Length: 187
Image 1 (cartoon, rainbow, N blue to C red):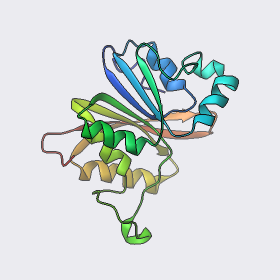
Image 2 (cartoon, rainbow, N blue to C red):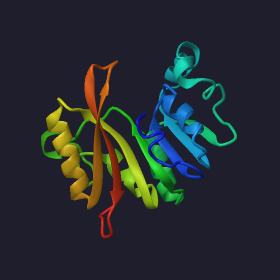
Image 3 (spheres, helix red, strand yellow):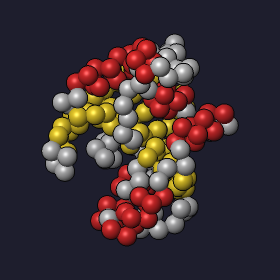
């Protein structure tokens, strides 16, 4: 992930949402964080990557728990709710999920969040003061998603920086976001 090497993770508490291929966990582990929690819903993805993608994950997922990391097999929404409820807040939340916006008026979903992204709102609530959400947006060609995501972040009273990075394996340019709460933010 493009954030590693650009942001100082030394002695920071990090929560990774998704990340089943182990690449973020493996690279981040080299950066000296205090702790890493990774919430991945699909244990079969972890097992397959452990076996077939060692160049990506190294030995970082050989065990579900190590000295400074823990892999939680479960829904990241439940993990976010748990961490918020227990006031177990993080310096960084890294969103490595595939998301799509949910329009209540169109889809009729019953939810109690302000924007089209429950994950974004919960992630921001799971941050320590001064913490940052690092999110992989969508590809540049998904301009509707990008515009809606950026509007949602602004609606929540947050600021962001976007870095556009070409991902050769997807043959697309993706938007990577660094998001932080401003004083008076609604989350």
